[in-house]
Structures are given as structure tokens and as C-alpha cells.
Image (cartoon, rainbow over all chains, first blue to last red; front, side, top):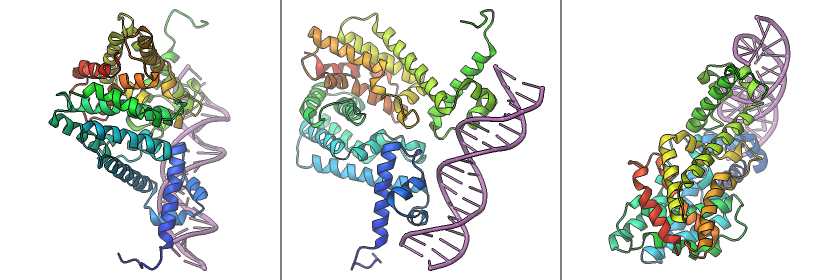
Length: 197
Length: 197
DNA sequence: GTCTATAAATGGATAGAC
DNA sequence: GTCTATCCATTTATAGAC
């Protein structure tokens, strides 16, 4: 920490402003339909300021992506932590995912629906990211404990969370009239029937 | 039909060539990373020819999208047709989806993973398209027949097909080492446990 | 119906003042 | 650290010959 602690640097605020504006625009129109100009205007900053904080447009997207993935990872870890057993943890994850989808749809839109590989060519696929790994590990542990019957781990994990993720897609696409959160138990229980021993 | 029947018009061949090249490039790099130049070169045709057959780049993508959706719709209808009962039909759909994913990954990449709304702003979300409607109808019918227990229809449909679709995502992202088709029965049976009465 | 050449616009990124 | 002005490359789309 070489920065002065006395007061929040102006630069950090601007950086955050740019990131939140970028999320707004990327999730609404997509990465390629959003120009630096658009971000500049919407954030009320200058081109130079953006390029001072980010090497280029791709680096901006990468910073945003990583920040949101981390946010999602923390949210899932926190949701899991107070619960024990595969079902309780899986249900808690689904509830947390549904909550995030309703409360921060732009975050989930960007994380779930965007095709990051098209503009972050070196990024590994989202299913290899930490939050998704955490979800698989819950199922793996359940299989070791005998709560989940013996089956292919990938199949077990997609069975448990695939339906929930599809429901989130529907909600984000606006085809689901009612609230996602109403369905947490129905979704979690139906999926659990598929894999419990 | 005002065209002469005697021989296949040259124009149709070129049109098909452009469409198949576009699918190749769109699925590999994405719509926005593919220029008309790229298509022109890869297809070995001229700019003028492309614009003779398609009003603009968006119209090209729309034609491709609709053609592939139709292809998928026909494939699903054919897979369903010889079977009776909700489970048999659902399993047949999953088998057909897995087969398509393995045999025509570019088609499925473009249909499933691309964010069409970013470049086809007037298109309705993919979950409202015919093939996805057909999948939901199979489940709806199963609920009427009593094969599927009473529950929210959206939840039932996503429970039945959500896991399979996630597995396809994994396969398309290249994180699934082995063959998708090996898992048809395991995936279908696990999902079925979730919704059967 | 297909070609080449080119127009017109946009967008990412830089330079240099303050 | 932030601003304005501008460069340069790329891209969509058109014009007009064949």
C-alpha cells in the first residue's frame, strides 16, 4: 500500500465508475455493441481517463469479468458455509443463485449469458471457474458421503444444478412471469430426487 | 416457383456456400469477430455476390439462424415421433440433442451458445422457439397423463432437460473428455426421477 | 449474377496540454 | 490523473463494369 490512507483516491472512484458503467452497457447491449465512446459518455469521463486505468477495451472487460466472478464465488461460498450435507448446501447454492439473479440481474446476465471467449480469447470456459468448481465439489463430497448415489460426477452435478441454471436463463430472458425465488424448493427438491441415493 | 427446374441455379449454390461458411466462422469466432471480408475470402466469393443474396450482414445471420432452428426443430420432431409416453419421448429428445452436438457441433454452438439478441435485436429469445416449445409440450402432456407429478410446468421442463443442456455446454466447451452419447441413459434417467409421479 | 474498386462511417487507441 | 483533439485501421455497404 503506497497510497495515502487519509482519503479515498479520486482515481479509484473513477475506476469503479467505469467498471459499473461497463457492466451496465455490456449486459444490456453486449460487449461488441458497446464502444469506448458509449462508456465514456455514460460514465461522464474522458477517453484518456479510461485508458489511464485500463490498457485497452479487452483489459477492461477482463477486469470486470474477474471482479464479478469473484463476487459470485464469495456469494456461493458464504451461502454454503452455514449448511451441512449435500442437499442443504445444494439448496443454499440454488437459493443464492436465484437471489443474485433477481437482485443483480446485470451481474448474472454478464456472467452467465455472455460469450466471454469471443472477446477474452485466453480465458478458460466459465464452467472451469471457481464458483462452478465449488458447485461440483459439493456434489462430489455428497457422493463420497453416500448421500448421492454412485454415478458420473459430471452427470450428477449437471442434474443437480442444470435445471436451476435453465430457470435463471428463463428469468433473465424475461419469459418467466413470476419470481424465481418462489421456486427454490421445488427446483432443488426435483433435482435432488435425481441424484440422491 | 418461377425458376427453371431443369438445373440447379448457380445462385443457390453460392447462397448455400455463403451460409455454410458463415456458420463455420460465426461458431468459431462469433458474429462480431467475423467480417464480411472473412466470409468473402473463406467462401471464395465476392462482396457483391454476398450482398446480392443478403440485404446485409444481419440478414445473413438471421437467415442462418432460422435455417438452423428449423433443422433442430425437424430433428426433435422426428426423434419424438416413433415414441410414446413422456419418458420415452424425453429420452429420445436428449439422445437426438446429444447426437446433434457430437455430429454438428457448429450448429449447436451457434444455436445454443451464441447471444443472438446482440445482433438480431428483434428476435425472440431462443427458449421461445419451436424446438424448445416442443420440449416443454412433451412434459406438459406427461403431466396431463399423470406420468409426471403435478408441479410448475417450467420447473418440470427445466428439471427434465436442464441437465442435458448443461452437459451439451460442457461438451461444446471441450471440458468433457469422453463422449456425450455414452451418458444419454444416465442423464435421462436421473432427470426423470426428478419429475416422475 | 458476379466481380472490383471505393465510399462513408465507426471505433479503438494515442499524443500532448493542463 | 484527467482532459481534448486526432490518427489510423477496419468494416459495412454501394457503384458501376462485365
